[in-house]
Length: 136
Image (cartoon, rainbow, N blue to C red; front, side, top):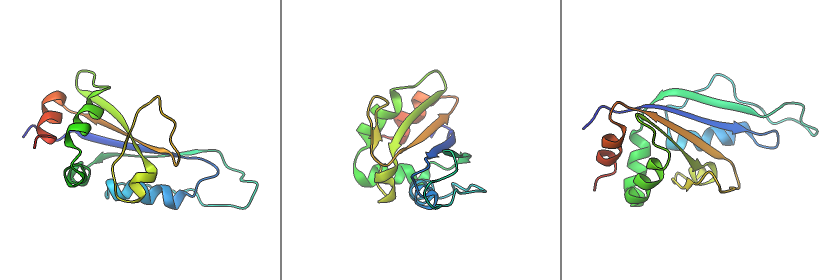
């Protein structure tokens, strides 16, 4: 198999959201997602702005495992290839679905309840890696 890509994952925690739940959702798909600071829930009115949680260098293994378990490898190839540019691709997955340990792809034009997780992949042979990773 082609060398695994560099995986960067990020999500925005808005003022009305619980940081712990947002972190938990991401970690169900990317268990090695670690951040130093998670926004805490406060009392109304919330005095903080939205905060981005981001981590680079993650393993794609659990994500790929879930794609196979859910039997959505063809859909995954399509969704992950939509924004492919040379050696990079970026796509969105639902944070609400992730909280249940599921992968649901979100199109950039869609509005989704519960927020999104942005996944960026960088690999020398991105198209080849995507095809190999989703082959069944």
